[in-house]
Length: 276
Image 1 (cartoon, rainbow, N blue to C red):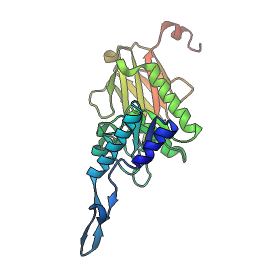
Image 2: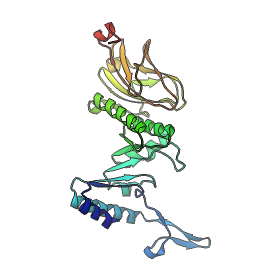
Image 3: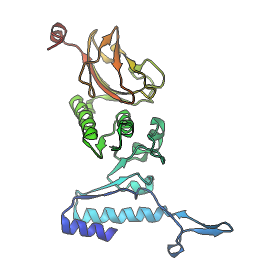
Image 4: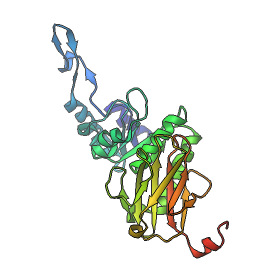
C-alpha cells in the first residue's frame, strides 16, 4: 500500500490520498505476524493498534516527502480510533451506525469527528433523502462542513449550508452547541436540537427536529443578542422568510429536513418595504 501511494504521487502528480477503511486497526487472526490467539473454542482475532498507527505514519512520511502540502484524509467506514487517525489531516465521517442508520446527535458528539481531536467533515451520502438529511443535520449541529458524496441533491444542500455560513462569517461569533447550557436561542419543545452562532445584533441558528413536528418556534434572548423588536429571518434551505409571531420565530419544517436560519434586526427600509 505504501509503495502504491508513492508511485501514484511520483507518476501521476496527485496531491493527496483518501483512505476509506484504515481509520482503525482491523481484526486479524494471522499468526504469521503475531496476531490472533487460541483456546478451546478455536482461533480468535486481535487488533494491532500499533501496526495500524505505523502504517499511517509511513503514509504520512511518504506524502510529506513528495508533496509538502499534500493531504492524507481518512474515512470512518471501518471505525476510527485516535492513535491511528491522529496522523491524518482530516476525517470524513459517515455519520451512520453499523446498520447504516443515522447516528443520534449525542452518539456522534461523543465518538466521532471533533471528539478524536481531528479536523472533520460529514459525508452527505447518496441513496435517498433520509440518510442524506440525517448526515446534514449532524453537520449543522456540530459546525462541521458537509461533504457531498453523490448526486446533485447533496451538492445543493452542501452549497447552501457553506454559503450561509460564509456569509455570516462565524469567526467573530460565539458558538453555542446543542448541549450547551445558557444559550440565548432555544426551541419550544424537548427533543428539538438547536445550535447557534451569536454576536451582537444577529445569529445563525441550526435547528434539527427529530420528532417531525411541522411547526417549531424559536425564542431568542433579545437583550443578550441586542436584537430589536422586529426581525428578519431566512432559512438557507427554504425560499421564503421565516415569519415572526409575537416575540418568537415560527419555523415551518418538513419531516427530517434541518434548518439553518440567519436572524438579525429588521432595518427601517425593510419594515417599510417588506417585499422589496
